[in-house]
Image (cartoon, rainbow, N blue to C red; front, side, top):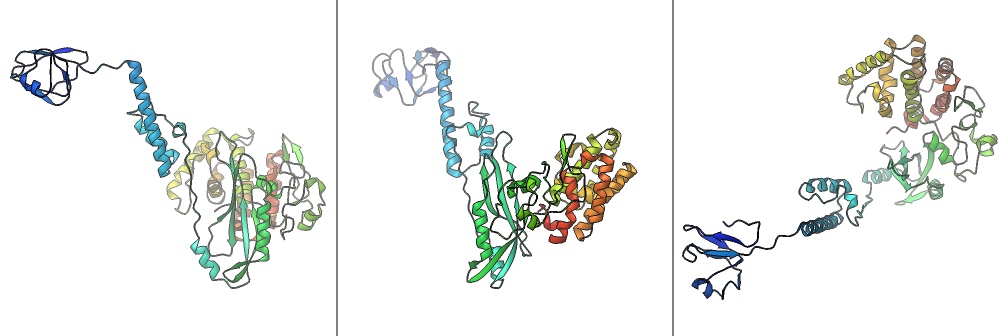
Length: 469
């Protein structure tokens, strides 16, 4: 075969026993008869554009000149490659928009294509005019529909809602505030999304949500049956609870406790609540605003039969697991020197935790991790440490008084999970906690434990008033 030559006007000498197939050639010299019969005239004045087999019978040791296409300059070649990359990028963009390809999948595809097309962008977000669309389809919940059909006319359901906010990106202020709902005593335990807010700021008072709650309380017609829905409880962490109520001081204010009228003390750059017995707030005292320092505005649930104290219980997941248990572990690992455990002890405890991984049943969502990963622990891991692992392994590593203080917390929470008596133990734990770690350690999460038994008496065990799924 005739290879492409890198220079123009190369002179090719045909071998005696070889033939060459030419597509476009400019011949120099006498034109053979066979070529003349095909329309090639004159001395090398025509380009032959069809396949021509040239052999020794035509040009025996004759030389001919073949004009190859002119070589492109580097700038022209770069421009062509850039145009080609733009065309590919445009095609990828149209393909992604047509088939609803996600940004993650498109970015992964670009990573593969860049091996052969290095001018393509690394990230799908940099493709020209890319606007990926998301389609949300609301489907009918057949199980929920069938369950409603089985109830009699005039039935009243108790609704428990959870409201919390979470950021979507680390580099942006965009946040999502979902309102999740769950019907207590209902055969379906999965929460459903009632509403969803997304924006750069916290949502404004949910007037639409409150108006819909009023309609549910007055009753709705479901396929000829009247069904009534009453708000039973609102489960939030401490900042979200103050935000939902809208009209109270936050937990870091002097009158920030939403269960009692204790005035906090500002110690060591934090607000503390050292007293474990103070006048308790009630729904009536809240409605009358008897403690004016606690209120900041009107009640957003005005017109609803909602107890602003009794129906906003403390959240066991945030206040106990992510609050108190994490605080204890941080004190033992990073606190004052008189409470901090030696590095060798921490390593032995971590080895013990990882050694238990093979013995953890499948019912637990996560396996134990080392204490160096404490900042990455989830709420379920703190709960497992409090109720199952901590009472077993801590006896070998902690001081006797510190271990007994931890066991007060373990015993009271274990009792609250199954029974309604633990008020005395919790008050003993908070008092002993302040004696061990100082008054500055009695922050809101620790103080809120003295009100936990009261919430359990009203709403049932801790699992009923928890943000755990």
